[in-house]
Length: 268
Image (cartoon, rainbow, N blue to C red; front, side, top):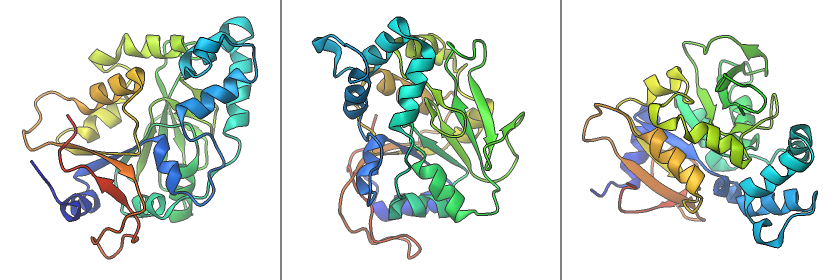
């Protein structure tokens, strides 16, 4: 089934499509102040500790080495250094923050989209859910935070929800990055335990638009597959994949004239 970019944009604005953002979306930012690929982050981690050459480019293994031979706190400290700066949100980040999407999934550790939400809603009214490492929060799979970064017991009933399944820099330095982090999550992902109930409820019956998501990492590929599947969903539910490009998109007049090149075949 081929769907026009115009149709997808309209469905985004109507809340029928869930944007799923990946690190490659940072390529659209005017200043990329953080590592924008798993490889770039792996190289930063490898520079902090003596790492075997064959795993210097493998993010989860480099992170696991730091965790094993130094300490989990050392790994978190390096991650905090890597993501201390926040990139200026691109026009696409800002557009996604203003359309009123109830749920946006951000699968990288940076604070760029959170900044875009804060700029679009200076009075708050949005919240975020972050995945938690079992090494630091055993038995707890996720945590909820208000727009000002305060830990909350429940997700607000209204307003945008930013879901960061592998954690994020702000507000609490939650990172799922080592091999053991992903082993714990993947052992439960098929029964959906690590996915917050609020996210499970909202995704039902909706389509997904993957933007800037590399599909070459088996852990993140398995997570996306598990996240976007659900039981008893209508056959019309689709998944599309796109990558950031300098490309003009004639669509909703409220959107910027900057967007993505969309594949003509839905992602399966």
